Image 1 (tube, rainbow, N blue to C red):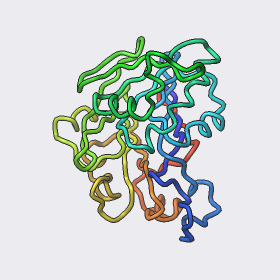
Image 2 (tube, one colour; image 1 turned 120 degrees about the vertical axis):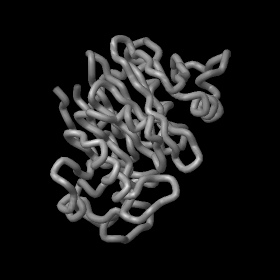
Image 3 (spheres, helix red, strand yellow; image 1 turned 60 degrees about the vertical axis):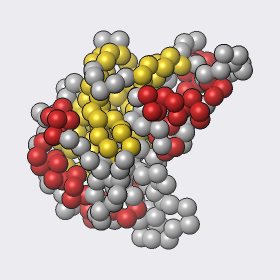
Length: 254
């Protein structure tokens, strides 16, 4: 399995428009973050988790030639806004793209992209096969995906486990039952917005506490805001098996 961090930033990205803080003015590429998304290459297929506003740019940067499926964690704009650009893969491969999400997100993307789901479709619009999942495992061809339910303040959201890889972003609360789905993982990518507490995201200390409990072999922190601080300085303070993620980072799980 190959996991590529397409974007690692929070909803505004980093740098933030109009901000002159030390992080937003940094020349370190690891401090420049597109909106959070990952690409998982496994079982001879390519799975994208979330298509944010930077989806087109991320696909071009990574020279992605095909996408087999898209998983949505939830329907906030920084996670779904780029869905229109999957039509490039429709056009190239003459196929629909399989999209998986919960019922709340399904209703939201139907409102956001009504032309995708219209009975009288306009030529050139994206073509998708929409599957709504509950909190039970499902298949993408030969790959089993296990949803992990959490809360993003009051909103139910989902992370995913694929074999020994776990992805969970935009989380402020998770039950003991759902935590058990994250145990014995090779790699966990986990929400950590900033050092200070936040109403709808894990802070750095909350993320570290959960990772200490779960003890994955490796963990990366994602959905990072400019309030976290400079990548290099924060990364030096973290445990050996935990790092801040950065755009374009690749992890191979054998």
